[in-house]
Figure 1: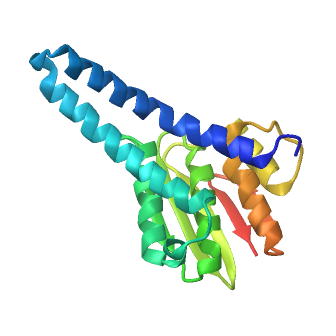
Figure 2: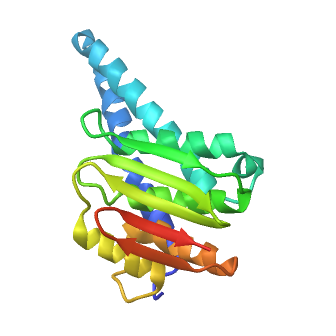
Length: 199
């Protein structure tokens, strides 16, 4: 990699937070103007944005932060990924999480994989994570297809093939590093769904 990984991660996190931070700022400006006609709208904006920011920050702390007790807790990891995916999808095209894992060493990899795969959906779908014969299996199961170019870029980033080092691929590069540090390989197969096998 020519770009330092921490720069890609920082850029990606900022990108994922800035929109809702801006929404909170706009709501505060409306409050300062004192026009109570918009009070219900302001409350809705603040409630939605604060919920999204909280879910994403908790997720980023687990996915990219230092190891901590929560990263060893399967229930916390599963809930964090599910909450994060709800902030990515919308009510018409939600992204669901189906997480069935028991080995704590795979938890961060599942978070990173889930984040990466959620970027590939065109109109919602399901992220699955489970263990099979000691290997972590991650799947992107789309409702209406995957973004082909992004899926190819994700596979290249995960497998070490040449790819543009865009910030949205930060979870792929970090997942590859985590797997390499654990002496694990990543295999990718793309058909109607995208499957990653780490082991």
